[in-house]
Amino acid sequence: EPEVTQTPSHQVTQMGQEVILRCVPISNHLYFYWYRQILGQKVEFLVSFYNNEISEKSEIFDDQFSVERPDGSNFTLKIRSTKLEDSAMYFCASSAASGDYNEQFFGPGTRLTVL
Amino acid sequence: GESVGLHLPTLSVQEGDNSIINCAYSNSASDYFIWYKQESGKGPQFIIDIRSNMDKRQGQRVTVLLNKTVKHLSLQIAATQPGDSAVYFCAGLSGGYNKLIFGAGTRLAVHP
Image (tube, rainbow over all chains, first blue to last red):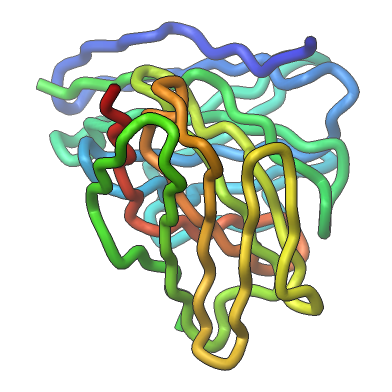
């Protein structure tokens, strides 16, 4: 069964450093998403991406964040200068289309720890 | 504003019992709702969904009920098994690009 994969599973970085979280969405999917989950809290939407551009972003997704689909398979989330409060699980998701009944498939997540 | 929230943070049940997990949503949250299951160390996994023009939808051992009058959503799991132990989130679909608004999560603990 096709699945979303993410690397690395755990990333430890120093405050102020740049990190890139990587995702490989399901191959025939067209819509891509990043969510994050601070420990013990709910999953929060960050950004959606379609046709090589951002479709929607949340207030969390400020100028320190960017997304890219550098090739036909990868989807990345970059945090330019990490803060302590960026420590969280980051989930990538993809769906075949937009709208109702287009299930978002989530990856296993990358745990980001900012020291 | 958009808001999807859960009534109970934890729920403990005996194996074989039925489980009911509840969720509330605000006016502008969504016309489409999904229940996700999250096991430790994994991403959310789709369980079942329901549109606002329905009040009930059944899957395998799971039923979702939607009460639009009181803006309440519930997930019923029949004959709960140890493998059902996880955190369960309700989520509302917002906007045209599948932005999911998640609730806080309920941890379901199934005891033998």
